[in-house]
Amino acid sequence: MAHERALFFMLKSRFLVNLVVSDSPQRPYQIQRMVLQMKIKVSQLSNRVHEVKVTNRILRNTLKYQLSMAESDDVEEKSFTEQLHASLNAVNSNTDFIVDTLNLNKAEKEKLDDLSFAETVKIATRVALRVQGLSDEDIDMSAKKADASKSKDEDN
Image (cartoon, rainbow, N blue to C red; front, side):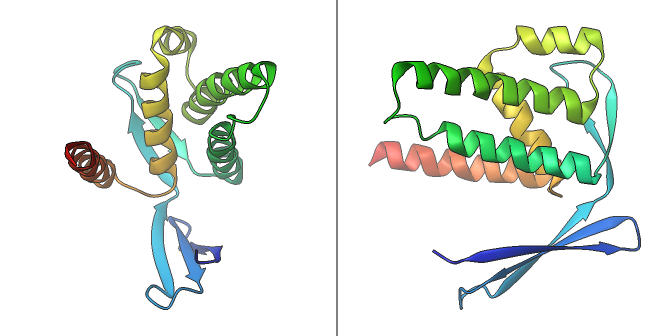
């Protein structure tokens, strides 16, 4: 697997450019443009459009969220108690990330708590990808490709 380093640059105070340098000869580098201020609407929570400014805090929280989700996948060899703690951490990580990033009000927090875990994960994943610079169209296209790939694998 290619060893990658990510470098972040400010460009005209409106975009954050993420340059990923890889030792892979097929893809030596990749540049992603990240909008520093964006509007995110989560229709499951409200009709309000959330203004999100991608600050160091928001970017750090996004990376912490992604790290906690990656770590929660590795629980098979843990004790039952450790698995329960990992599950609780996964629920809290998802909801805390959404609440902090979108600055939810009390009514939106209550609606979030009433959603299923699967719906909450979808929202948190979409918010994390938006913060990292993907558009709603990019995310939808990736989801469709993943669904098509998944159904192709199930057919085989």
